[in-house]
Image (tube, rainbow, N blue to C red):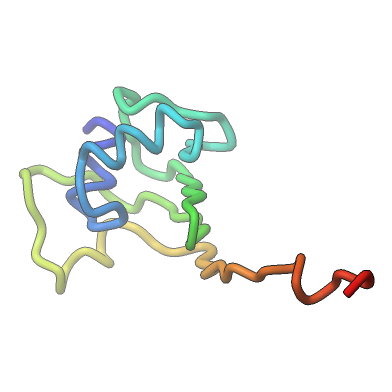
Length: 99
């Protein structure tokens, strides 16, 4: 299964076009290497996703046969290795000694 399709079907990224764009921008890595959206995903691959508000790493447990998954069984297809929610901090106003 293609990487962009896997990310969309598992719900890691909401839409396939967004997954495709994230791959084009180099925000998605497979086994530590920036990956194209067309890359085939395999079992035991580690996928790193670095988005504006979230950074996560997952390990592929099994491949998906169809075009959709129920939300209740999505966790059976990957395990979360790291999930960090980023916060936006305006350092300029907090650390500016001139004011």
